[in-house]
Length: 369
Ligand code: OSB
Ligand code: MG
Image 1 (cartoon, rainbow, N blue to C red):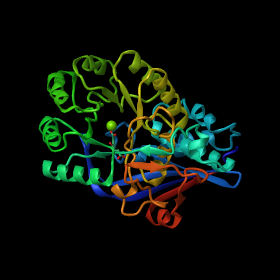
Image 2: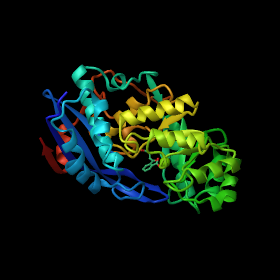
Image 3: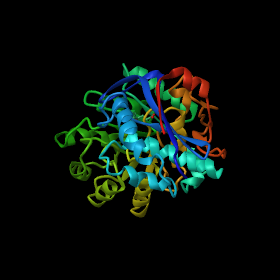
Image 4: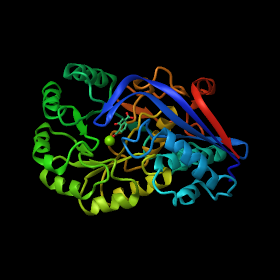
């Protein structure tokens, strides 16, 4: 497989509802789509970098530059044995996993299409025909608004509720949520809003029978999380801190987490996501698929990823309509009444692209060959 052309497009897509985390509020996404061409076929990837460097160091603008100036030139014109060859070609570009991962994912999709198989099969997945889904609910303007949102998502069928927390929006909020919904699967994600000095404060959350607390401490920390875990009953799940299978192995060895969130972009694509999955599986650490407010392309890639065997917990992979008035794929991603997404068997990531819509919301485009 020889990649003869790579097209980058940046699209603008307003969210149906703002999404607020401990690091800020998002109302509109600026997403880079990567189209990789070979043998007259093309595959698509999505860069999951946000609009600002607050979740990690990347943002739309840095990703564009990394892709155009560093990642794409290293992959273009190469005779690749397969999509596994992309990760090592860009590995010496330090960091910028989301930029590199968007290109890598496009080549996996391309390879699946060339073989005429669904992406989930190409990556070695297929452990399940439908994936269990949860929702991630951002910080709201009031607890009443939050309770109403939860009600709505449960009615739609979602299997678990994840709430974003931060100092000032944590113990009291979760207490009211638990009072109102005593039996739901519930978890909290702090996006690094606390330090080890908050351990006693965080211990109060143990009263609410949470499935887990996600990334309470610093984005680049493993050691303090291990300390914190000895003081909490609920399992810690790591997100931001884990950028490679090696990090996962270290976190597991130090007992810094009991669960792992895997995000395709954060770890630089499918090859590393699979390695991370395997490291966790060998250590009996369950994983689930995280989300980055992806459009239909990134969402479809997440669905494929979540068919690997150790993705046993509901992920942050939810229906298109939670995010977009109109998605860029056709049909939009939908959930079943029992809170799952069904796997599709069309070659590649499984959904058709709405190319006219993509063209209409594109703010820039560049092709390298
Ligand atoms: O920490 O999981 C996170 C969104 C943006 C940045 C970080 C995170 C999230 C989510 C949203 O939780 C998941 C989704 O619905 O896509
Ligand atoms: Mg998270």
